[in-house]
Image (cartoon, rainbow, N blue to C red; front, side, top):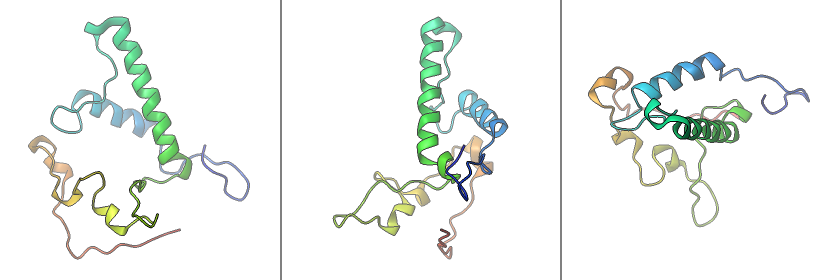
Length: 126
């Protein structure tokens, strides 16, 4: 459940169990990038691999709850602040030395990418 609206807890309007399972299947089987897969265990690793997969899943869900689900938001949390303690707008272009506009998908994921729109505007909703 999410933060309260008018004093009442509510279920997410953005996140559903079915979409989570669908995304988990894709990221576990096909990955999110070259060589990066969501580890859910494997038959070769036996019980130890199964337990590692469950811990990985629990850690992911805990992080997702803290950063997104509780706020019913899919926006990235800005972690990098400037020397004055404020969060610069440039975080939306990349954090931790990443440049989101320069990132590309592998060929097999090209169907989910789109060209950079240099005329795009930022709009805030609170």
